[in-house]
Image (tube, rainbow, N blue to C red):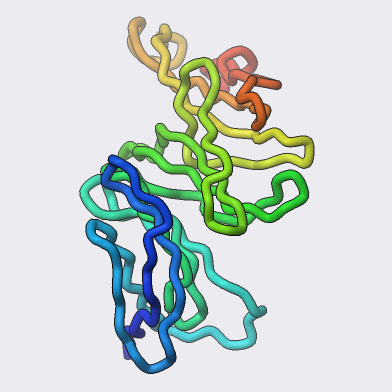
Length: 214
């Protein structure tokens, strides 16, 4: 039997700008009230627990809500009962992935990717780093005018981050049975210095992997 659990929380505005996105933090209301108060234009998800887990380690669940380009999306922190502890709605038209905890300068941070996702599963977007007070600490972009992909945003102990990029470039594909004037994805890895945004390291698959071997 599917049981829809009430969201026992109160949303408070943490920051508001000119865009349609808003950041929210939350506090649980007293047990049993079952009420939900939220700010305008913010639509937190309703979570359903179909099979309650048993014997799990204590802690919270991290979910990246992907609603599609026409529905709200954002990172979600919830407890085992499906009650939301924190939610951040990304700007309209964007989606969020890879929401998790990491460490930056010896302190815990929240990180995720946000952007648009193609039908092929390729992302074009940027990365967020929030501190333990749910305030934006860093907004990270790929270098050389490229768009960061959704699959990886890995912080390092030396204050940098590894990201992946799929860059579509024109290519002669006759060697693999394709058109002479075709297109191919160049898979790129960048290491970015988080303080300056400078590229520390960059690797391109087209420089190392022949098309017939890809």
